[in-house]
Length: 109
View 1 (cartoon, helix red, strand yellow):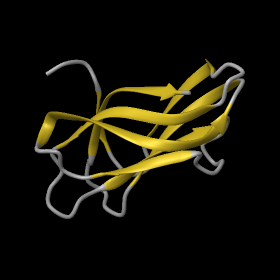
View 2 (cartoon, rainbow, N blue to C red):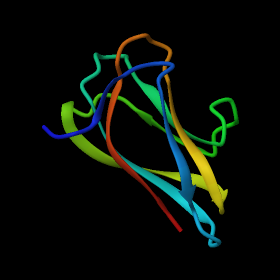
View 3 (cartoon, one colour):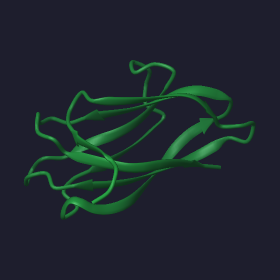
């Protein structure tokens, strides 16, 4: 076990204010995630800037990883981003069940 955001389901979101990407564009997003979701339950982890309603600048799909504490680091391409922004992680799924836990995430240039 450890500290993580858990019980994440469709429609959930997290906000991180004043994230400084600097002047060199970030092009990649990676997150340490785990899922013990039932068969057929999956979803998307999406990165949005400045508003939850803005289009995602990056995303990845996640399904069962073998358990709610069975962690995988999943990379995703990101539209180039610079400057200071509010970052939103949004979670979408076609099912109402929990589908992911998030341990950490990072951006790379």
